[in-house]
Image 1 (cartoon, rainbow, N blue to C red):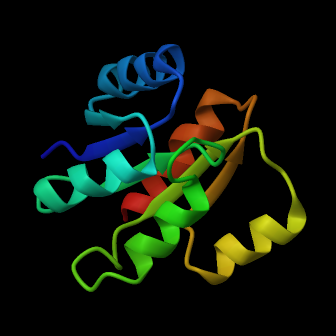
Image 2: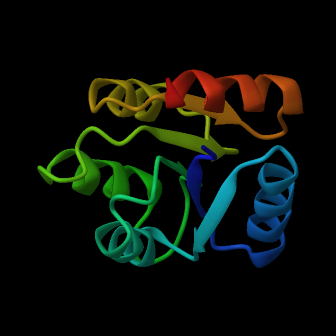
Image 3: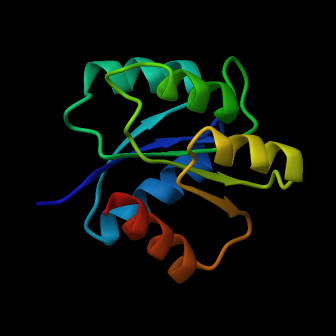
Length: 123
């Protein structure tokens, strides 16, 4: 049974690349341009989405705001969330960890490391 990952990034080229890469590895993907759209998609397809892979810095609702909203909503609070971002501020990383972030992957990343974080978060 293949897992579905919601890919959230405000850059279309990054979103497309991530979806293509994950599809090649056997995952299904959905995508959103920011945290607001991602949360709406999550609410609509709750049973279908197994993991949220999101950028940190985005307009309208950033990754941290999305994580807080996911964790504060009963229906979504158990969903694994991974940040894939250029952001590396230790206080933000600590706050995300305290909120229950599954993994923080810093760009640029090694594909094998990135995929192993996803597999681990899905278990």
